[in-house]
Image 1 (cartoon, rainbow, N blue to C red):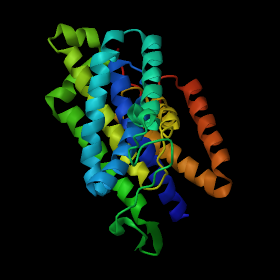
Image 2: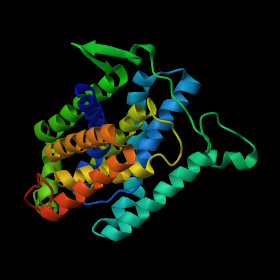
Image 3: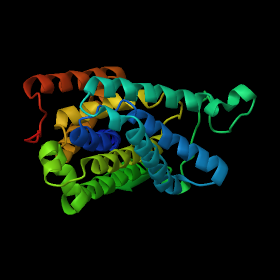
Image 4: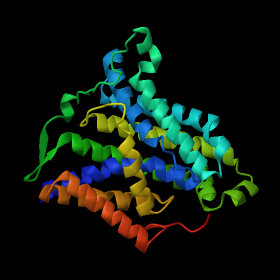
Length: 297
């Protein structure tokens, strides 16, 4: 039973990694970023490419993916999202279009495939990442045998969650983000540069998604469409936990991960996913603002 609970905890950690960025950007900016899953995919491809071209492992890929996806996120915010604030449907459609463009760019190797030029690590094929030897195999905690890589994912998630909490609650920029989450107009009236904070928030959220992609590349095949389902999973966690609530995202990711793990162990993955969707729908009906909704906006 402990092994099943541990698998559920690792699944919840992946959900939380994907949802952390969304919890901040959706909460602060009210933007439904449909390209968030593609930031996860880019993070996974950064791991693949850095391994092929730089000989780097996952440990090096983590900061590299954060920087790359944060810069891409910043570019998306500056070029597209900034012009669409307050237009929820337009933002949703625009970011969806960006997601498709990113997928095709990876699939077509940035268009070079039309010229007969191929970049190893890109293209429509499947890519695999080798996990460092220290993260392979299992270890024993008492009499319980647990997977080393899943343990690494849980630790990375815990560190990133703590770092995000620290930034949000113990720094000036975090205080400004929380003020914008509660009331953006009042925050602007108090002198907060809402546009600058939103850009940095979007970049940070994208960077977290990139790290989630690095973690996923260690146990899942990497391909251009892999981020599509990730954005759905991320929004499930954010909506269930409460928009803008980090604590809510942590709890909802843990709950959904454990339910998924327990049901999948007793039945199969498909039924487990159906049960998770059913529980999220039930919670949305009973508590439309989520389990840990913030006051304001």
